Length: 237
Image (cartoon, rainbow, N blue to C red; front, side, top):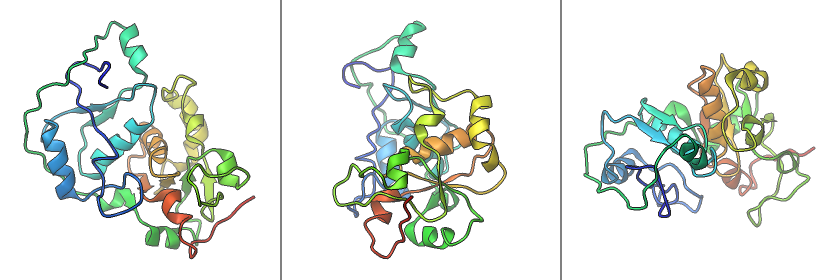
């Protein structure tokens, strides 16, 4: 961001705008804290918000979901990279804009967030699909988790949909017709997405929204929380 960003863009750090009272990474904060941090960025009620990443869609999807989980409807993700922006003549600047604090109203949408207790209920039946965005080896339990001390494997009855399969090699979201081939079975019912720490899960939720299912919830604690609890069942292949 400091080296160059879209003019007027502000830096949203998911590791700072997060719940302070947990060891789990970048958990969704409460509405009061979210409002406080976001208004200081100069974001306010009535703004159209566009989120982007430097190297393709990743954390941008998480930020998109965070705003939606806080009741914001007018929020979008730029489909592509900073290089794509420059390729079409977009300019960059290296100085942060002067943020004017504004009024921002956050109303947490409980329907877009799932916690561990809810997931323990959900995984006992197949009524609500749980889509896991991690790489197949981590999901199957054949490759180690990147976080020390966590077993690999998956939540019982979950389905592996690696986030990478929803993106082009450059990191843009696939066209809708290709997404439909991968996610067509999950468009007309409630869905929960999960991953390692709640970031790439949001890529699945974003892809589903592109296809018309706007209400795919994210298991916020994801595998970092689930695998750390010995009372949570883990399946492998």
